[in-house]
Image (cartoon, rainbow, N blue to C red):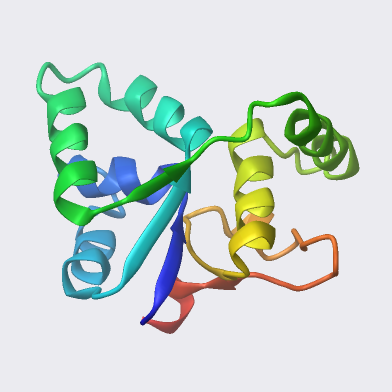
Amino acid sequence: MRSWLLDTGPLVAYLDAKDSAHTTVSAVLDRFTGELFTTSAVITEVMHFVASSPKGPRLFTDFVTASGLTVFDFTQPPALQVAADLMEKYSDLPMDFADATLILLAEQLQILDILSLDRRGFTVYRTRDRKPFHLVLDSS
């Protein structure tokens, strides 16, 4: 079974028909059969972005439930330390906390396929054992 990590941008684009990436992301997500994973930091970012629409948070919650999206948390001190280390390492991009947690999740689950609009970051980011990410939009 295929497994993907989900970043903030595609989730927001999926929910917002006015987003320039909406059509592409919707087509990819609608035909995907497999497991989807993300982090609580990504959930927080998405909720922030969709809050401007009265139905945005509910639409997102419905998507999370319907898709079976599994959410992991990386807010305990050891994970926070590693995330901060990653943010320092990639400060020139810069890397935000949500991206750092996605790297931690990739390492934990051994999943390198990611649905992200952040080509600048995820073409550069590597796991601690130097493995690159595979941006699924590049092959769709």
